[in-house]
View (cartoon, rainbow, N blue to C red):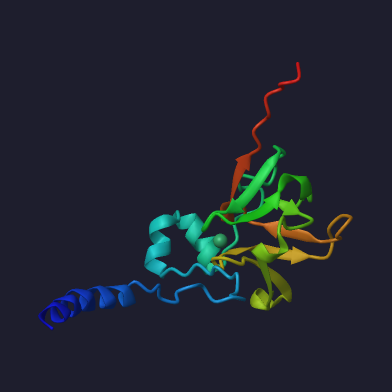
Length: 172
Ligand SMILES: [Zn+2]
């Protein structure tokens, strides 16, 4: 009998420990949305953006035509959101619109930009925003070239350009 008690005393903690080892059900729920909304306070945005970037991205400002960094940029590469780094536009869709702002006839990934009606300044326009951080990028118009007929008129200060690296010519 004494032996049995000793066995029980030894076995019980092991049994409980075993029960505690069971993995909790912390598997991510299936069918979750892919929206990765970046939310920051105004104070946080001011810390990471320049005053010009803050004015355009967060206060829906507009840089003066022909003053931005990229309106005349013809280098091959990719344009990212200056606020959160989301991929927005490719140089492949950039065209010379003569309007003084970088213009694209398509977004690189449609899900990365958000369009919404804008009735400010007594005009009816469609605003273009970054879908991830909600930053104001510019406006979209229906007077662009083929194949889309659209013109994304974007502030240079809202985007960051990364030049495409030339691949070393290994075949020579
Ligand atoms: Zn963004």
